[in-house]
Amino acid sequence: MNASAQVQAGEVVLISTTLTGQFMAALNLSFWAGMAIALPLILTQVWAFIAPGLYAHERRWAVPFILGAGVAFAAGVAFGYTFVLPAMIRFFWISWRGRFRPCRMSRSTSVWWLHFWWRSASRSSCRFWRCCLRGSG
Image 1 (cartoon, helix red, strand yellow):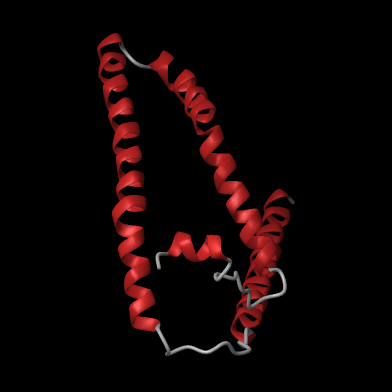
Image 2: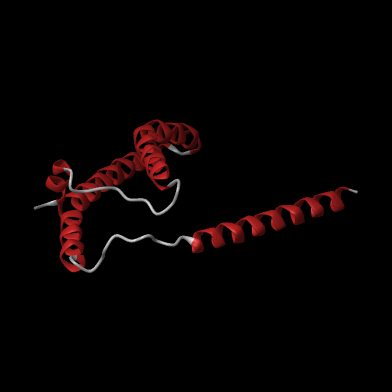
């Protein structure tokens, strides 16, 4: 049975090992979907900013490269979704079968990293403001 048939049959369940894991997954998916939908407008604004600074012969070469990059990106996404994703799912399904059992996972490492980054950021910002205040006086 392939992955999409399992999802449709309700056999696949999204699990989370953190308190906010499922919310963050939905937020992450929404963000990237929004970026994909807004990308044409964003690129139009970038082009409107860059185009006045280009010579006519440079502008003439830019359009084919931009269109070619868009086509290559779409072809890469289609290839990955059509060929790579099913092969990857099949590989992991075969190699992981029977090796893992549901269990409670410890996320103490993520708490440690959060503490580490928070302390690093607060120290850096304190040093930054100290240098700014010292330099202005």
